[in-house]
Length: 520
Image (cartoon, rainbow, N blue to C red; front, side, top):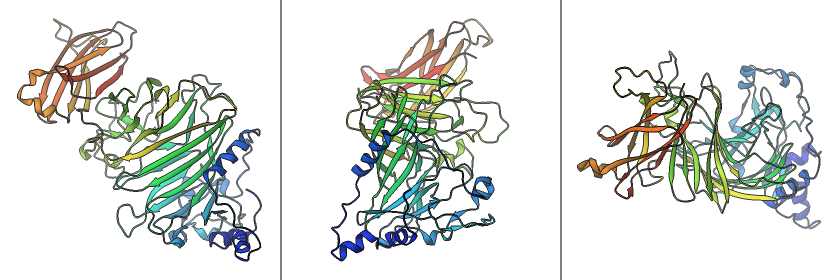
């Protein structure tokens, strides 16, 4: 951060920066308002210089804070920024320490003039955590969050938080935090130990001061990392399903052969389709239970998420996808029985490209986890052609905090996936591990219409390997839909991807269910 006097910093936050004062006196023309193009220019210049991996150590005692000590440091709500304009947004800042050791510069833009927010101990309540020595005004922050009257007209609820690398999370009405979004993902598959995943980070933010009555917050961000720099713009619209319009311009320092655009990160430990031995009273615990895709050709796909025995990477090739997202489709409290985590109120994040993304694939990475404390699921878009150094890559997309997938498409939807041993013909015991029965509940759409003549409904299955031995479809009055059963037989050592949907005659009734299976 460039050297700026404390007086200038504080004056800028009050709309009394030195530049604006001179302009009022006629001594200098008014400055050009800060715009997204200014961040793009900075990212371009930064890409032309070698990456600086230096991370200055935090001063004592910030470098020794444990989780409890860090958690005791809280921003004072009465010191929130942005409120002087009369707008509906308030900004609070995160203190450095514990896991968050990289300083981030946060600027406030007022009347087009950006001014860095100075570190002040008066901004925070340190609780039982003791800070014995004064900390520098240019210390920086770990990140920030915006508050808005999301659930009540008189209460400022947290609506979005930027904290750690390029991670951010946001909420719609009556939602609880679960999964996260990221600015960019690099080499998530990390197929070789010598080529690990890279985490580019937001090094600086600019937050516009919203005008009175505005329902939009605008945030600019500068991305940096060993392989790429970038400029980002976030137009945030809080609401029942908060929406963010994201614009990005990337400048690769090296060829990005494994880049993840619009990455989403979530947690899946256990669900009805993938149970693990546990003595926990809760039937399920996950932030997301499926990957949902709307292909460029118009097909809707539902891929249930798993907690696999080993790392699993799935690919869904497409051309100009219409959308994808990690969803929490199961909204029943009875499925989770958790009065603290509120898994049934966690949002899904839906990515909707703005413009043409061309050829590429959606990748889903599932990593085994032994508990619910680790994010182990990542989904993102990877273009067919790598981004090359010297390129200027621009793209945009819309992010939505989805409360329900019910109205996202008109067809029937997968509401349950079960699997169970299947009995071989003539055998009383289901002893063959390469023979498995999959049960898929479809509901919604126009399925209830066919209750009068259920024989018209057929399951259309396929497998990438092995054989389908038997299928049937029966009405399910509990879901007001149909349950399809598929018996699959593989050869020893085989693995297969299964697909199925329901139809009546030539009419497709449901989305397509996709599921990978590797016999234990």
